[in-house]
Image 1 (cartoon, helix red, strand yellow):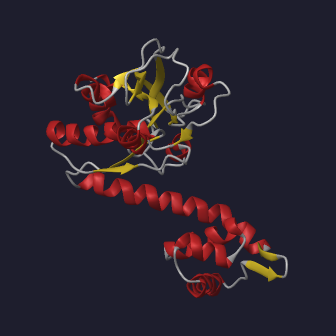
Image 2 (cartoon, one colour; image 1 turned 90 degrees about the horizontal axis):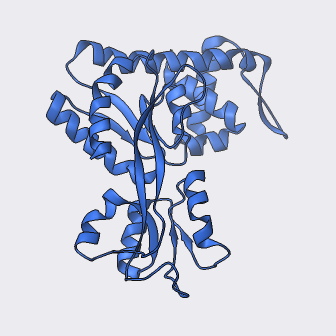
Length: 281
């Protein structure tokens, strides 16, 4: 069985369109049709009903769908684990929910190389997806999240909280009538609650979900933003940025979430000490 056929089948089923499936898979619509036809020929059934109302699963397609999802999940698990078991390479898929933790993944990669002598880690910087769900679906082995995982299957290991401080491109006080432009990093409900009083109804702030981009903008164009202290400590020391006087600091929770019973559970536990070390540093 060609796994590309199953993946294409599931994408058409989800999008209910050959055209949208082609866009998502970055292939031509003709290629989508060819793969579905090949799968239908192999199974000797019709998988989709095509009509003016769109594309929907036939009874056979509805029957196949959960089996296709399970087969792909099993294949991903086998593919990921066989190399780990029979080679000396450490292969983990690690992600983070918030952009402020991208540098931690790089630091963890360096720690793994220097301490365990193994490479590489696959780093995931997709901040739009729910990374805990990606771990639950075995698409990630480990994630740094601002939330604990619900349920009993996944473990949530507390990391040292992230110290957040308000910095500006120029010296100022939080009580000043004309504060600089606020750059909102959109770091979740805990962050929103902590910054709500500062923002109030004041217009003019901008939103950047990427913290590194936001800091670059702040340095070049001015403004202020709540940032992790570790990301701005050097700039504060060199007076390239300034702590906003009178602004309250707060902390963001951090958790390392993984599946201890998953195929990569033992490997994750090899790198957890490194994650605790670089997060604490």
